[in-house]
Length: 317
Ligand code: SF4
Image (cartoon, rainbow, N blue to C red; front, top):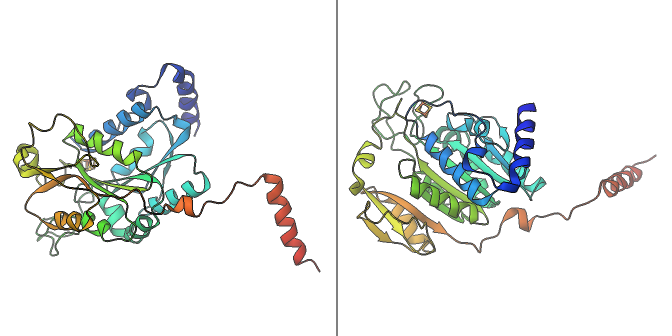
């Protein structure tokens, strides 16, 4: 705690001159060389610097996994929670402290397996927070176990003959939940798109769900290899209300105009396995946001004590 406090004070001193992306880095990420988590951290730092979010005005919440080390590396308040429980922690936090910007970072094992129930309900609650699912298709921290998003047939320590079931698709699942208000996909190896997606997610008022396809050179080195080497295997979803990442036109020849308000097309595009798609699948800013519809007017400490005393008096004998 003391190191967080010291670094926050240092940053407050610097705030008048503006914070750079590097000012938001608390310490070097301890991930394997070439891990996609580095790219995600860089994009997050750029976003924080662009928005000049004060470190004491935001919280990073995570569960357990390689990517869940995020709160240790960002100069902000942080909550490295327990496995699969990042979303309920973040929801409670946002309800108690609505003025804070809440970011959630989870891996595929954390979110789509042990945390799956929370993921569904947090999506429906549509509490205002920016949610990053770093999906490398494997349990990396515990060294190579099949996760729900591991491709069928892929071998791991727990499936030495290959995963027997088709992989769960986080986009299709999220798009199937009532009140889902923001669903996007990006990739760690396309930094301009990753940054633009995070920007859109941060600006959205509601539960912004961003699946970041994340390279794990240690355990799933080949799952995105084709797309990393050849941009022709990727299709960009483009629209003025979608993810706007200038400069990618020349790189990605395959582009599809998709209105993010069209839920039917969003679901159809998420289901098709012909190409990997990056962009905004769905966005609707009109859906009810839980921390707004359930907002409780602030009460002073004195008023709270007075109400408690009144309640106790009802049972006085
Ligand atoms: Fe990254 Fe994979 Fe190493 Fe974990 S095991 S730090 S996900 S490369």
